Image 1 (tube, rainbow, N blue to C red):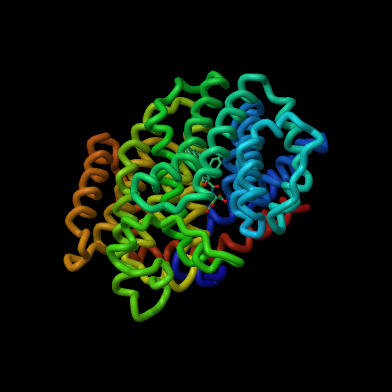
Image 2 (cartoon, rainbow, N blue to C red; image 1 turned 60 degrees about the vertical axis):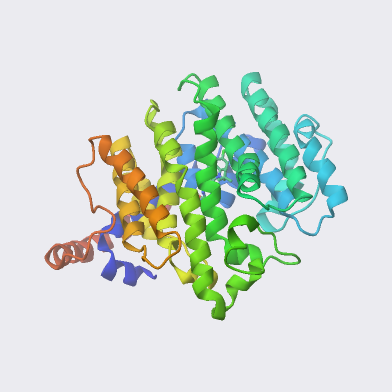
Length: 411
Ligand code: IN0
């Protein structure tokens, strides 16, 4: 949707979008002077955009550790993802990657675009890594070791069962949760969270990505890489590719809804992980991706477009989530609301409708039991015409002022 479309349909998203743009512009000017840190933060901004902004809001020591952790994981991911590298070459690299973190003479060129630059200049990430406090280094090394071994295992093995699916997601995302919990603890900001809750935080994000990215992954060149477990998809099709053809769309959507229902299992753990967080910046760093994930699942549920195009939350809604996720009350409110949206899309004829309803009920209960939801209907208000026209008037008055501010900020 273009700017004018947003102004007309979602005027409430204008201010958060301008605020986000201004914050991004401010942060892109705050690149550190040392070459390796400059590279690390520039790379972070290139590969993760809005998420980079949330990382930058962490305190300086933890921010450096998370930035390096993020780039090391991205590099490992680049090796795993590069379908043009043969298995025989890839497996030993994944398994020994953690050792290369200390070896400034090591390099391996792969990936494309920004990821190729990350790999070609990985030495700069290593220099940054070696500057971190030993406790951070050990946490990053341990997770890199376990993740590399897990990725190597799944290069040679398909995701067949739901148990495999959870195991694969544990390696590529659950372990990120374990690593982050350790970094928060080492930084003395948080108590050490349990492995099980930390794992669920990663699984919920990763399963949402896997669901949303069906089309991108199936169309991957030279070879598609799929993570939807056979145990689920084989109930609806002979081959996983069949879902992208129009004549199969009814079954495709049933399978999609099954996958979404599976992902919802993790929500309770995620809420339990976030509730005791004490540090405001860490809280936002954890909560924003989680709210984005439940929003994305609500958007994808029962949505045939997942098989035709990339389904993503509007930029404006993303900007609102970033601006308005500050407390646990906001998180409960958002989870309640996006769950209710998903619930409104359940059709009785869907084979998993009763299980999906049950899981949504559990989530809504967990949110209301907190006793702190007051402002429901924040994200998904039906259009209220009088409210909107007042807002529109304000927007038309404010937009030139905000644009001028943005322009001045760029100078
Ligand atoms: C992440 C996670 C992440 C953040 C906070 C707490 C976490 C706890 C457990 C596991 C992961 C946690 O968040 C990012 C979010 C992100 O990168 N968003 C993208 C949007 C997108 O669509 O990809 C953005 O550009 O803003 C995430 O997805 N992953 C990630 C990777 C490293 C770290 Cl340190 C933290 C990737 C993944 C695979 C889900 C773990």
